[in-house]
Length: 343
Figure 1: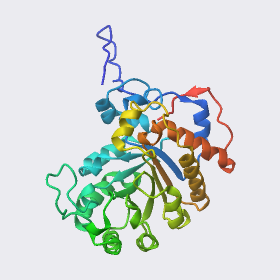
Figure 2 (figure 1 turned 135 degrees about the vertical axis):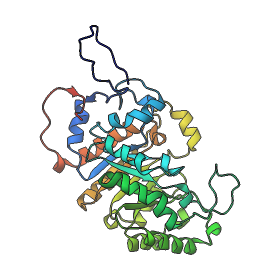
Figure 3 (figure 1 turned 90 degrees about the vertical axis):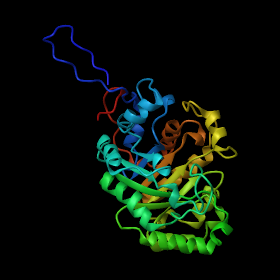
Figure 4 (figure 1 turned 30 degrees about the vertical axis):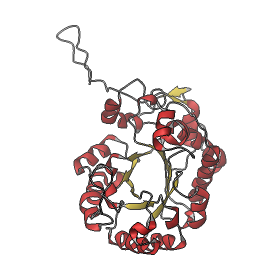
């Protein structure tokens, strides 16, 4: 942090200034935020993107600076009440790391945490050397010790969904759909009570009534995801009704027809909408309203690769939700036309 010394020795030393702060929030976004159901939390995949200057952050900052100091500013935006923790997909993190996250954000903020990919990949993931059968795949003991325990102890009431994201899996690699679902059932059943668990598939063949039965029996949520590798969102909603989910979990991840690397190169620095996806936005908004009617908690995470800029996607999504939910609209806030959000 930067500290400016006083001109005279008897002057008090000023408090350190944060390396980055929250962006000014336009009055219309404050109004939209006031109309959001309190059961709904919108957010983005991670927070360390320099291109979000003026959208989320008040000044230019490097990715490393934002990774270390950007969360506090991010969490002060009235429309960003959750965030995805993606780093945990590649390696587990400690209780202390989770606790630092929790201490940085307001009491009503929640984290969506991705579980270690060792739990969801039947073969050793890329970066682990030779691709061979992975002994940690769907191992509940490893999950409890390395993933669930540290997250729950570190985040506590600020823990949102713990997400098990499965990559595309050829069914014959795991003995077919039936074998996979039986093993998934045993795994989910062995997890301790407390966290909200969610499963995200990238294999359309696993999306079935039997899969829905596994989730219902174990009290686990399906993560509805918009991703080219997965069945369309409409199909997911047909198989698994939001009304029967313990919570609504949605991840709007990648624009149709694009691969991750192509989308990243096309959309950087993630400061504008490049490829609008109005149909996905409309369907997600309507699904959120269905979950609100059913009195379900809702978590919606948006990735930069969905349209080009996840904060702007979140703002447009919130606008649609506010447009359709006048019963949640309090009186328009008074005060200045623009403000920064109080901590």
